[in-house]
Structure formats: C-alpha cells, structure tokens
Length: 338
Image (cartoon, rainbow, N blue to C red; front, side, top):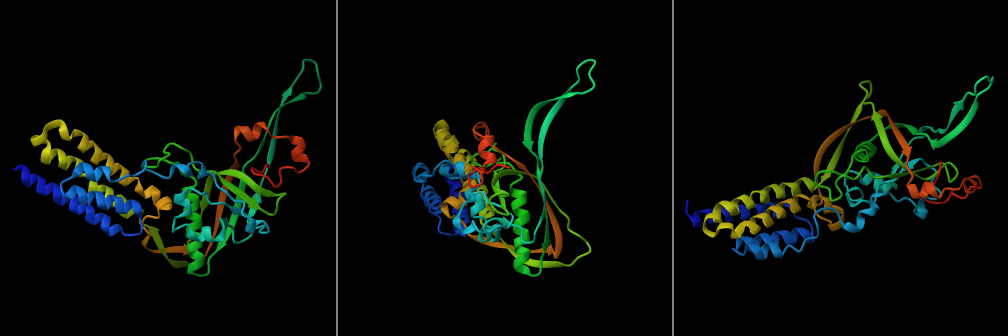
C-alpha cells in the first residue's frame, strides 16, 4: 500500500469521525470546535486542527468540583415540610433528563409519608475496680446513628412512573463513586442534604446514602412509562470513531515521516480521550439533548428503603458547641446537626 493510498484511508477515517459528530447535533460549542477541528484535519492540516480545539481539561467544569456537595436552601422550600433528599448540583446530576422529575420537584421528595427511624449513641466503657460492687462508666464518644427511611410508593399513571424511575436512578447514582472517565475520578459519592418536618427535626442534615433497597413485587400490576436518556452514549460513540485515528496516522505516515509524527499521534490519541470525557461536560456546555430510552415498567405498589449516615466535616465537628445546640442555635444553619 502506497503513502497516498494510506492517506486516503486516513482521510476516510476522519470523515467517518466527523460524520459521527454531525449525528450528535445540539447547540454545543465544544461539539462545533471538535467538528471544525476534524474538518481541518481532513484537509491535511492535522496540527492546526488539533490546535483549534481550544478545549479545557477533559471532564466537568473545574468550577463545579466543589459543587458536588448538594445544596438545598432555596426560600421556596422553607414552608415545605415533606421529607426530601436534595440533588447534587454537579452538572451531570442537575442536567440529567432521567432525573428531571426530581429536579422539578426540588429533590427526591417522598410522595407518601415515610416511616423514619433515627437514633443517637453515647458510648461508655465499664470500669470494674477490684473489690467493688458497682462499675464506673467512662465516656468515650457520641455519634448520630444511621437514619432509615422506609417510603411507600404508589404509582397510578405514566408521570408517576417516571418519578419512580427517577427516584431509583437517583439512589443508584448517589451510591456510586466518581471513577473511570470522571474528571475527579477517585472521589466518593456526593453528599446530599436531608430535610423534612421543619427546622427542629431535619434541617440541612448532610448525609451519605449507604444503602437502599426496593422490592419489585410479583403481586401487583406494572405501568409502562416512556423514558428519555441523554446524548452521552452518542458522544462516547464519537470517541470510538476518533479513537482509531492515532493508529491510522502512525500506519499511514509513519514510514514516510518517521518519528516526527509521534507527537501528532499522541495528540490525536489524547483528543480521543478528551472526546470520551465530553459526556461529563453535558451540564456545563449544554451538549446533546435527549434520545429515546424506550418503555420501562414500574410496579404500581412498592416500598423503598433508604439508609443514610450523617456525615460531618472535621471542621464542623471541631467547631460544634453543645451549648449552642441545646439552645437551638444550629436549627437554621448549614450543616444542620442531629
């Protein structure tokens, strides 16, 4: 195979990748940059195409890293005493079309009054002096125990079914860590805030979801609901389309230009990795839209059990004042204490 034959094959790969980006669509400036870069590369100016990308580091917007902690303090919810878990403000959560019913509701609001079990523990160790009738209790520490929420769910129509699906998807999501292609890979699942029953019961309690369960009963009817998904899968497919470019460059031009194209091959390889991570930018850049997810079937009667553990930072634990707590000084603050 000659050099120009190989170059033609390389150009066709670029064209295929560009066509994939065209299929993604949407009003994404990042997508336009990538498509434009591929056009330049197809015209023969590979380096110019790579330089034209002008992309930030792959992954979510850096400014939103700290926003992985949930916020829930809008004035419109002050009078709402229903039990709810907030949605992390991380763009992947706030822009998810599957989670839209929860976003519209202001969080995972349990639509029927749940049963909640709370506890607090104070740990003491018994000291038994020799020749003594009674032990002395020495205090070690205190801790808020886990909070177990048992919430009934009754579904009567497709809209309520979509809410049920969103609730399960939310609980699946907040029990997983950031990993793989995530910009902050290695970080634990995000914190969420528990609110309900007014300021003196649950007010901005930071919790981690340690476990949830739901039973799909065989003794009830199921309702079909049309679900939409994000364009993330299409964008990841674009990464696969570009992924072979680095190898194609080396195969097509390596013999003619030697190691001079090593940096180009590496750059295009990095481009593929960056495109693979563009799915994490959906919230920040508005890429994609929604694609049909088909019908899902939801039980008309079920019960969701969620186990939460209060999670406080070292700084908030260090500055905690029992006197202030007893006086009710933390009831309107963030974080709230339990």
